Image 1 (tube, rainbow over the protein chains, first blue to last red):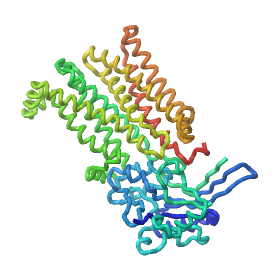
Image 2 (cartoon, one colour):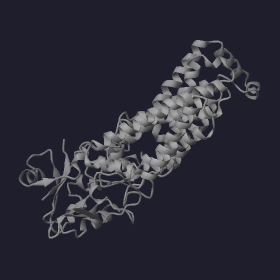
Image 3 (cartoon, each protein chain N blue to C red):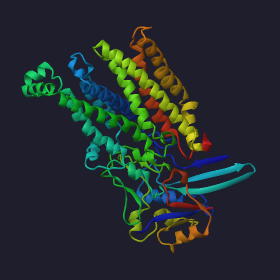
Image 4 (cartoon, chains in turn cyan, purple):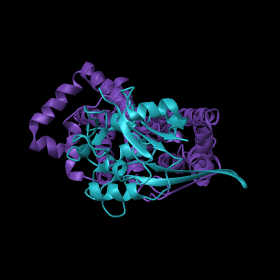
Length: 179
Length: 315
């Protein structure tokens, strides 16, 4: 079974926010809310500083706490590529999934249900990349199947130094950042 | 030095998680209080105290029903899609503490109603003689009463532990990462319930018994809080930082003054003297215990939401 995920090259990301705009447009994300965003991390002490710009979103974890804590089964892992999704029809808006996510990747949609990145599953089903990946002008984002050792994302991880976000939270995230 | 900036500004999420306001702490407090009342009421039934017609076991079930329903109302008010609340009962999610809680409540209500049948008020007895007859048959059967008492103790214990497990299962918030929250909330609920019975029990002997029991519960609560903090302080940097939020951070004053000082140490001191008959029993001590139990939930729910893996360098 496929395990879709992303590899993002922080050496190429310039924080232009095209991915953010593409996501909002593609998924009609309401004003004032974001399914993806740009994070800028500065490490070190002047003048020895390191800067990492990266695009962040739901990590579609292999061990998603948002799914296990959901009391109605609204949060679930879909079969196509183990993408973590929310069924708005089942969600009661208890917000346990928001509290359970170490990435704070979820929010409450104005209609009351928990909302977040879907990896643009409607596009993935058509064989396309998620909108954020498709529009990236620096081609820093790569989407693919980690279950396939020959996929682009698997080969990138094998070849480049990388890190995930908050691995100590134990959720096994499926978005990796090349450094 | 690490500085993290983000373009995200989602409501209820940024700058720090604040998805749960007053409703959830109140719900957890009332759930714990009712859990304690069920255990105490069940114990009174189980141990044969029902023979004393002035026993608190005749008044606790009704009050428990009202308080639990108020707690459920608070939970209901917190839901973003209130009309979808029935979906909790269309499935059972074995890994979700909230699903467990929803179904435990289905067991709690019948146990409380069975307990309520012990004494049917005269007006109701006149209107529904069958209820009166059922009550009479129950009182004639001590085995049935013991069974109802046992059910109240078991479901009450589960309800009390659940209120803590609900938080401790959310691993993204380091402050809540402790299995001790379950027993801590249970013993805090028992303490608040003992204080409540101390306040309202018609029987002097039961009031004295509850004051003594509450002293034990308060000491146990102090021990659990100490172990909870030791567990956090001997864990990762994120957990140490989380403990700092209540030990000396923005929630330090409410924790030390409201929870520890006024909620546990002061009433414990008063009640220790009272049970030795050095000072008279006063409603101040149990009222402080109840307020302290509420403050404990507020501190842990609010500080827990602020605690976060990512934000270690920012604080």
